[in-house]
Length: 268
Image 1 (cartoon, rainbow, N blue to C red):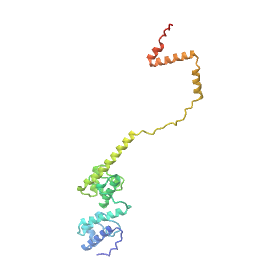
Image 2: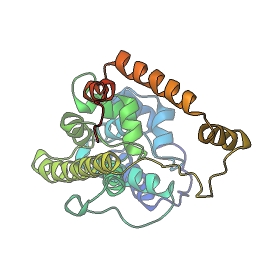
Image 3: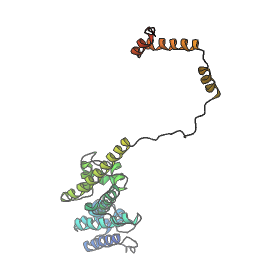
Image 4: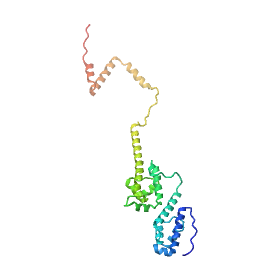
């Protein structure tokens, strides 16, 4: 049976349960790591590391380990998912639990709910998520990275479905997630329309001059005085020049005709 395995030392209680289960499976099957490696096609060191509790092993390794020991892969998958979930949660600061889809009301809550969904799925790798999502381009790794890190939400319904598929959410639960996603996008659209309408109605910044008494220059006062002191002849000449300018511009022709009509002598 080989040498005795070292003591399990980890703060991840779910990982401890997984490692105990793997060791019990190998012991029940009566296999050494070398014999188990022949059955699984994996290196003996890889299998031994999976049962060491140093870190959460890959899902493929855990499933191969269970098959090699003739154990149910469903049990192995469940234990592995719990270990990954606890590991993912321990790596982020604590806070309020993510809301259920039916209680999501804004983008922040939707992001938290999608992150919790990812953790419930065992925090799969971005490569695994892309493969699970379906056809190429449904859920690129860059998009999955932004969603699980709360930097974005699915851009459309197809990408939402791809994310749910990558997190192994049954299709009978998709409707509640569609409702949460649609509710957030509708609220943001309404807020955007209200903001645009307010920006259209409200005037822009206005600039006003201070209300101070108007100060006229000495030159302006001199011009006013000169106008008042004009001789009668200069007044007539200036009036004729003004009439010529008005006539050339075609304005107020009726007034011009009245001003230019001959004056009838007044008989007393």
